[in-house]
Image (tube, rainbow, N blue to C red; front, side, top):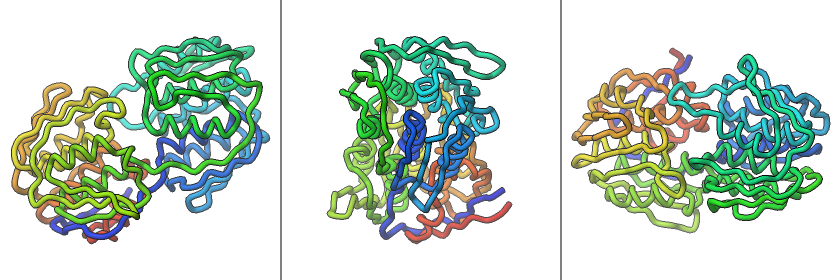
Length: 417
């Protein structure tokens, strides 16, 4: 098992390229199950989760080849409709195959998903959406078992916006009989990426990026290619890295409009963020000012940036209140940040962070993907050595983060435990 070792105190400077978005790549890969053919995905990140999805598609009969940052998928011979526990337990995003399997085969048997250890992320929204589209769904021995003659268009309403369930419904409804309307749909950029891909396959979709999406079902789709959008969470993480170290970093391959909430909050801390021809330049403040943050569905401040921003607030001037309205218990990183000398108190879904002048390096343990990033960011400014264990989480969502940070001047390396 690997750990990441950091000697803090280095100011980050230079250029870093933002990889493709994992959260767009995974549903796009699943969507290739909707129609037989050969697909080419470019700007795909080289991540554990992406390779896990590739293995999943392989079990379902697809031929998947990874070439650096491109993926070739041939779904011509996909005839299996069961997604086994052995793969699904590794990644919650495996639930994305539910809709495409139902749409193509009229049946699906998908294990209940796994993934990060924190917080409930029920699959109820996915199941109800398939039922709204006419599928018969039961839970049997840890599997979602669904059948239909052909999915039928309907109105699908989500009590709260769900990115995954919105994407699953869009995929399934693309070849349903009739028109489907998704109300209270998620609005994240990844939704638009899936919508663009489905349209390139021949789907008729309107309104993605708003809270009301309309899908007019077609008889069949065809294979197409896709260029994956940049990862806005990786971009946000490197923006915070620049800010927390008082650095000067140019991010290339980033879309400013996807990061507006994070940019706004970083500017409030005193960071200077400017748009240049090649990307976004982030210049960190001498000492960040404390600001309050409340996570919210897009276009609000993303819950996937909460832990990283908390690391910045740990060394900010003043006190801040960080409220996570998406996942009430997504604060497993707090005890580990406190081990580094942070002063954070949590009451249910609210964390009060009193900034300290300096952190002190220590051994800490990553509990999930974004907590891993937060601990690495804190380690960049902690005095002495910080050793982050269980960093297999980081490989699920960040491509060679230690190499990218080292190229910016950080003293960081990956070593075997």
